[in-house]
Amino acid sequence: MNAKIRIFIIALTLMMSGVVQAETLTLQNFLSSLKTHPIFVKGTIDNKIIREQQNEMQTAEDWLLKSSAFYSHDEPSFAIAGPERTDAIQLSGSIERLYWKNGSRLQAAFQTTGANIKLNPIYGIPSTYYENELTVSYILPLLKNKNGFLNRLEYELKNFEIDITETLASEEQENFLTSYAMKYLDWVYLIEQKIIIEERIQISKELLENNRKKRDANLIDNVDVIRSENAVTIAEQNLLFIESEISSLLAELSEIVGSVQLEDSTPLFDLYENHERLDYNSLNDSLLVGSRILQTIITQVEQLQYLKRGYTEDDKSSLDLITQLGLKNAADDIPNSLVLDKPNFSVGLQLSFPLGKRKSKSKSLQADLKVESLKNQLDNLKRNLSSNLAKLVTQLNLFDEILEKNKQQIVSATKKTAEEIKLYDKGRGQLTFVILSRDEEQAAKLAYAANALFYQKLFIQYYSLTDQLISM
Image (cartoon, rainbow, N blue to C red; front, side):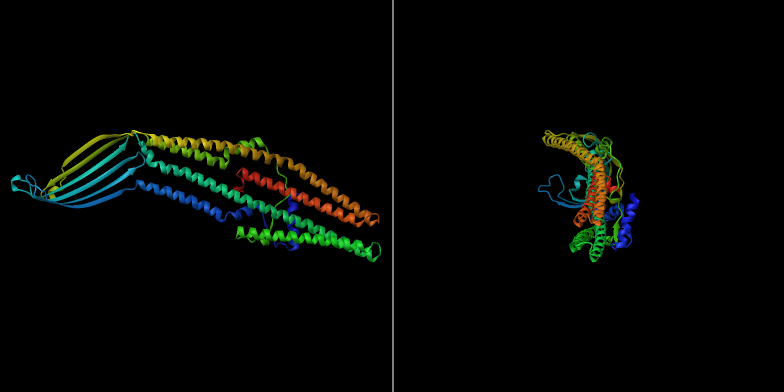
């Protein structure tokens, strides 16, 4: 039967039976409604937290303003050639900044000092003087932390963490969608079971009515009427069980979806749809290249390799170029002391190197071992993914034959029922055989539906394995 016609008949039958009002819900729409679930919000929030942690690291490049104020009083124990007493006030302020681009540090500072000195006049030094100085210094790393690698290390490592967090969140979300896509298919299957059992009830009631007429005409025994009534009762009991299953499943799904009232909807899905055959080789090549979970491990390997570069960089000798330019002046009054006309300049190299490197070597070795472990895990995961894909593809490609046998079984059971009815109507058969034949016909239809459900669930597993479900 054409898929669209089949879906139309199911929806029409359900509406006529009063199970649904009018709304239908496709698998794609159902999955879309699940994307408002807190598990999706959690992934977004977790990612934002890490990004804000990374943004916080950029404050290392912010300008830093410093200031200080000191007062000092000094009376030496012996004042043979120096001052008997010194009172001084010193105010200083500076502004500095780190540059990640090259790891350099720039600082500008201003210092003013005022002093009152009690000194023997014979020295010719004023008792009060003021000194002001402006300096600019610049430090540039030439070996260790060249180009600011160590300054940016933690920031760059956060990029790897962001990628990993996003990937793991997507993986968790897809697993969530997979589990509820399976429940959606269970819903479709229960509706199909309901239709099959309702058909059986209708046929059983027609048979019961005919047998009552035959009994009234003394054409059959009363035991055949009792058997017909029992067949109707069993079918109605099965229907009540299926309806309870549907109600409990819808109650669960409604709570998970939240805003969608599933009780007023019916699934719009062709349970018996056939899919194209899959080619394992091309799918496996794509899977091993684009698998999300594989990419997570690859990113972890890259993160450790980048961290190891940090250990290597930190192990280098430190050679810094240090330059300083200054202007200053001192006078016995404030205005003249502010005329900064006495320059000074210095440039130099500062070298330092560790005598022992055991700590960095140990950290590098740990990073290498972790990378080796991750690569081993990556290889194992690739084999598992390929194995699972091979199993799924094989099952899916062979399942067409199984479903075709189910359809043949239904045709055979239907023909058998027709022949049993003919024999019974002619008085040459027993009602028991008619009922058993109808049971076999219903069992064949239910088996076909159950196998079709398994087939569609295999495809959901395939979509999940190949990271396609989340984009549906």
